[in-house]
Image (cartoon, rainbow, N blue to C red; front, top):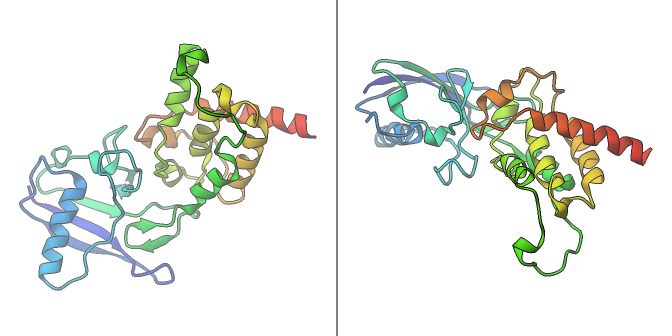
Length: 247
């Protein structure tokens, strides 16, 4: 398989960037998208050119670090799939592929396809944790939690903090990410003591850096874990209750 890649190259945050065209030749249809970029980088290094910089770690759809825009879609054309899990068999021989970093005000480009996603970390630091002293771990079955609640909390906890939701949103909003992190703690007994203080801190931190949600639902469409915008409604409800409680 041979492809033509149009890749965004930017040396540093303070410099302007541009698209550069590369050839990806003799690519196996069974290769992942990142493995294809590895092949292209090997060719560039052999020529004495600087390789394309992109972020990655586990390459198993768990760490969330590999995100990039592929033909204008976060993580590429296949739903519920991280970039590292996207395989070249979903492209055709001779295709032209445009590869860009996340495009969002809150995610400034560091270099090439790598962006600064520390804004998501600041939301977590604001309250995405349980700080109450719960003592030593108890036997799991001694704390009854209804199965539907367990499953809903786990659906929210699947968020891998990749930032695709922000990058795809026309407003650059961070509501889906924040809602997932608020909900997976707020649904469980361990998260109840700080439920309302948590949502206020996290939402207000989010709103200081990210855009406003107008429910385009582009975030849900590109989330590699298929997290539902229903969690945004849950977060908004908790936030309103929390404000009444506090005010």
